[in-house]
Image 1 (spheres, one colour):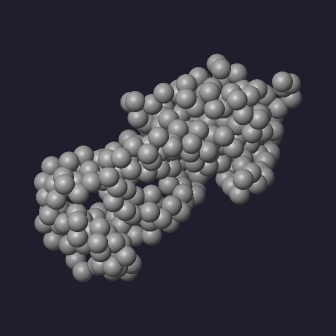
Image 2: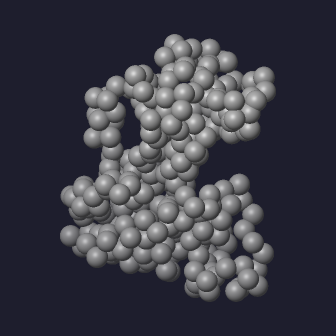
Length: 275
C-alpha cells in the first residue's frame, strides 16, 4: 500500500498539472460517472493530502477524495490524451496534460463537512504543517498495544506504512513489541522528528531511504538493494539477512496481518520494561 509521502507527491503533481484552471473530467470505466460529471468543467482550487488520503477541492463541486488502497495508481501524461486503456475510474485532462486513476479503493466526492469528519478521525500526519504530535503521543502512552502496531493505526498516526514503521523503530533502537504505554516521551519525540525527516525526503525523491552514510552500498562495498519499493533500508523485507550494524539475522513475524521486521540485537530496547 502506498505510504503517506506518495499521497503528498500526488497532491503536488495533480495541482501542478491541473490547478487554477477548469478541468475536463470523465469516468471511462463508468463507476464514477456521476461524480465525474459534477467535476467536469470545474476549477481545481487546491489539493492536499492527509496520511493516505488525497483531497482536491473543485469550485462548486466539493472535494474529490481518493484512497489508493493496495493497488491504486494515478498515471500522468502530456496532452492530448489518448484513448483510455483498461479500467480507468477517473480521467482528468486540460489539453496540456491528463491523469488516469486506476484501482483505487475510494474515489468519491465530499462536502466540506464530510471532509472535516474524515480528517477528525485521522491521527497527525508528519508531513503536514498543522500536525500535532502530542495527539499521537496521548494515544500511544495510554495503550497496551505494541508500538509496532500503534504506528500503523491511522487514527493514531497518519501516513505511516510498513516500511516507515519498520525503519523508524530500527533507527530508534526500539523493539516493535514494546507496549505503547512503556515507550518513553523522548523516544516518541525522536521517532516523530525522524518520521518528519524521512517522509519529507520521500516526497522530494519518491524513494524511502533510511540508512546512514556509513551503511550505503558505496560505503559498505555491497550491491544496491533490489526491491519493488526501492530505496536502501535496514530491516524492511530483509528477513534472514544480516543486519548492517551488528550482523545479527533480521527477523520477521506477522502482526495484525502485516509483516513485521526487526533486528533482535539492535532493537532489544523496551521489550523487557515493566509497567
